[in-house]
Amino acid sequence: MGVLSFSKRLLRKPGGAAGTLFLSLLVLAALLAPYIAPYDPNVPNPASALAPPSRAHLMGTDRFGRDMFSRVIYGGRISLQVGIIAVSIGAFVGVSIGLIAGYWGGLLDNVLMRMMDVMLAFPGILLALLMIVVLGPGLVNIMIAVGIAAIPSFARLARGSTLSVKESAYVEAARSVGASSLPIIVRHILPNIAAPLIIFATLRVGTAMLSAASLSFLGLGAEPPTPEWGLMAAIGRHVLRRAWWVSIFPGLAIALTVVSLNLLGDALRDILDPRFRGLEATRQRSV
View (tube, rainbow, N blue to C red):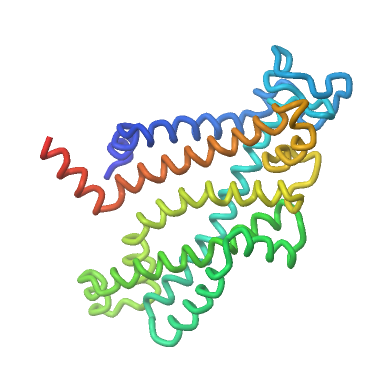
């Protein structure tokens, strides 16, 4: 499937188009934050403390007089970075474990999967909290903790996909010509299990961002005055009755980003998953 054809199919789906549009705008705003943000996000202005939304401050100001619009834009940089890096950590380690367990099987498979089962016994946010207790609070440690919490899910998905692919004819053909295990895994198995992993990773970015925001809300992540959405919402809860905008706008940014990622993930599933492609083709023929 070419890039152009893939893009057309993605944008034909309302959810895919909406998710792609919002995420594109978010990424663009994050990249151009120094040129878009009207104020420095970390410079206080006590004279404008808790000012409501207006032309001067589109999303109002917080209790230190910092412009909320500028902080939300810069917060998108941090939240996207946290989500992408955390999922990258979980995907790299988890997929590696799943490939090894699924391809070689036997005792190694049992040991690795029992370890993943132990990790899955803990809710993701609780496992991330345990990692924060070990590593200590901080933005970098949040990325590591959330990434570690994602490892077992990626491992189980990669293992299941590997089990269904490793007995395929093209894998047997590679073995018959003397290819060793590592080239078979990298060249033949991994590309053929990439579609469900890409879909899951897209959905997982939203979950990672939400987990990171939750940890920051609890005071275990980013430290003031970092413009991180979860931390901004936490700071705003103390003045929620007087200045609703301090918490509402960062919370709305989190919600819209997570929903957009879920919409994009659903659209990617419809395009990349052969089962859903078959259902779509059947529906089109019936129409």
